[in-house]
Amino acid sequence: MSGYENTLLLTREHRYYNKPSGQGKGDWLIILKACCKEVNDGRDEFAASWVRKRTEWFLNLRILVKYEILIKTGSSRKGQRTYYRFVDIEGVKKALSELEI
Image 1 (cartoon, rainbow, N blue to C red):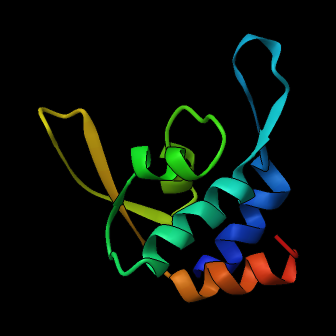
Image 2: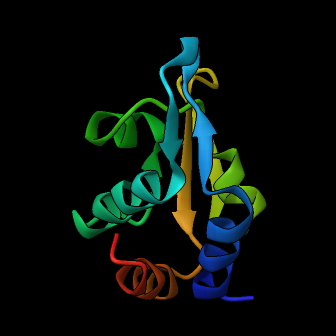
Image 3: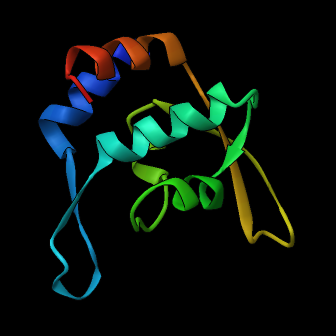
């Protein structure tokens, strides 16, 4: 499946996540858009910590790896920072545009 199809599947099956301490729900599509901005800044790979600086709280990006939207490419700093890249960024951007995110 493509990034487009996987993004739509994420939207149907697991769009929202619970924030800590009853702060409500977060939206994975907002997190995904922030990941796209990291790539638009000229990077092929990005760290989850960089995405956190652009957006709201989230635990990690594993759900986006599970849906095959992102691929984990490695880690550094004694395993404290994990790096990711998109499988199909153009498909993801198309889906986000159609969903008006």
